[in-house]
Image (cartoon, rainbow, N blue to C red; front, side, top):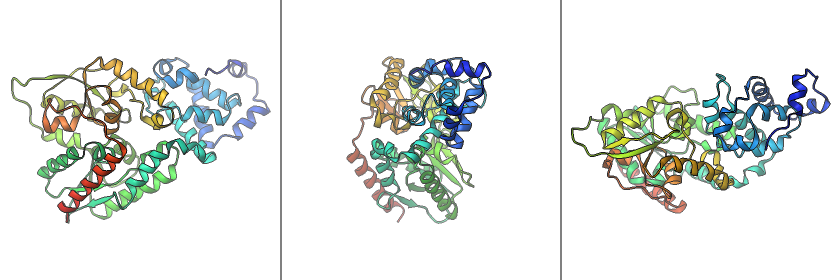
Length: 392
């Protein structure tokens, strides 16, 4: 969908906003209105983001989109449709030549507005929200914190579901470095965040971090990129690090003559700004027999697998556009991922291994297979039982 030029021409001519435009402004939440005004005023209409993003190819450049929204040419309900077609991956923000301008933040705000006004919009995401509630429940949560522990491993939900043995062996590796390392199974509530339910996300995130602070924990080691992205939003006394950072610090360099497998790294879009994590992952891959062959979209230009924003739940055909682009760039190379959600998305279509599997088993580690919902829940319960015995 492209925006018409009538609004743009009117504003450029200096015409005062008419009654319809005032009404349109009144229909927008304050945060949406401010972000849209910033977008309209600062977007250079350079098309750099539009060239890379399937959403913007359909709806037009962010500045034109914002201007249509402010003028009333695009009503809030239709703008909400666009927002829920966004993966919230942030590639548009990364590509934008205007420092500080964040197109994806406007779509996030529109989601929050739409979710508050039209709760039925979240019906297509019932599975995601149910998955979150399960992860927050006493049945699936576990807090194994030894007396005197200062560090806990927080693998999130997706990794224990998809790779339970890998999760456990990673915990054992961390305990070799610090025998008092704790283990926490819980959900970061990222689904609520991306679906516009800020209150749910904020309440659960604060509760989790405050509980860990009261237990004397100083360092939270995460394996899930979504958890890292979600929990670092909070002001906390905890230091939040990735396990890749911790393990890369102590991982020995390889000896000569190590046979290598050409591997392309699929960086998770939520960590596009984390340069140190990108390097830590590549260090681990090199040390364990992978020769990294970069794709065009990597590091800060990481490409979403199509799972971001819950897009694959509600609009699988749009999510598949992102997936096809990623697979086309891979060109048959093995893929290394460090997001279990991305692994689930990519593994049915290409040889895909989790970085932690490669760390534990070398470059010859078997390609992962996707797991179903029920199997994932059972994997998490088995892991919790193992943890309960370890931390009894």
